[in-house]
Figure 1: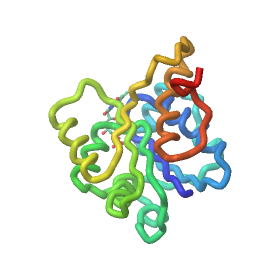
Figure 2: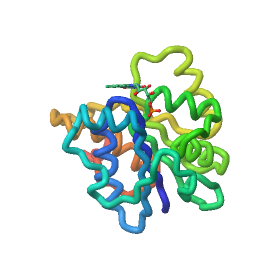
Figure 3: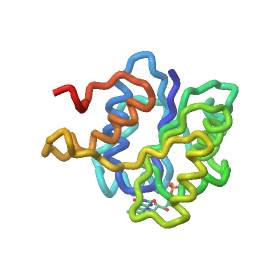
Length: 183
Ligand SMILES: Cc1cc2nc3c(=O)[nH]c(=O)nc-3n(C[C@H](O)[C@H](O)[C@H](O)COP(=O)(O)O)c2cc1C
C-alpha cells in the first residue's frame, strides 16, 4: 500500500506524531509526507521536540507537483491529513488544488481512493458543516480529532491515540488498540 500523510496548520500536532508512529511500524507500506508551513508553526508550538523527518519518511515540499501522489496514474492508495485545519478542508471541498496536499486530496477523490481528514476545529460553523457534507458526498471521510474515553484509560496519550487508532482501522491496517467488547 502507498499512503501519503499531510500535516496541515491546525492545532493537534500530537495526532500527527501518534499516527506516524503507528504507520512506520507497518512493513510493506510506502509512506510519503507533506507538511504545510502553518503546520510547522503548530508543531514548534505544541511539540517542539517532534521531528517528523526522524523516521526517514520521504518528504515532499508543499508545491512539489512532481510528487507521485499528485497524479492519479501513480495509483497511490490514500491520503490522510492529520491534523486537518478547517481552512484545508475548505480547499478540498471546493476543488482547490493549488498546492501538493490539496492536489493530492483531489486526486484521491477523483480516483475513488481513500481520503481521510482528521479535522481539528471547534465549534463548527455552517460553512464547516457544509464542507464536511460535500467531502463526504464526494467519497472522503471526515474523521474528526474527537478521542473516545470508554477504554477507561486515564493516560492522556492513550486517550488521544484513540484518534489515530481509528485512522489505522479506516485504512485497513493492522494496529493493536482497545476494542470494545474484547474485555
Ligand atoms: C496556534 C494556532 C493554532 C491553530 N489551530 C487551528 C485549529 O485547531 N483548527 C483550524 O482549523 N485552524 C487552526 N489555526 C489556523 C490555521 O493555521 C490557518 O487557518 C491556516 O491558514 C491553515 O493552514 P493550512 O492550509 O496549512 O492548514 C491555528 C493557527 C495557529 C497559529
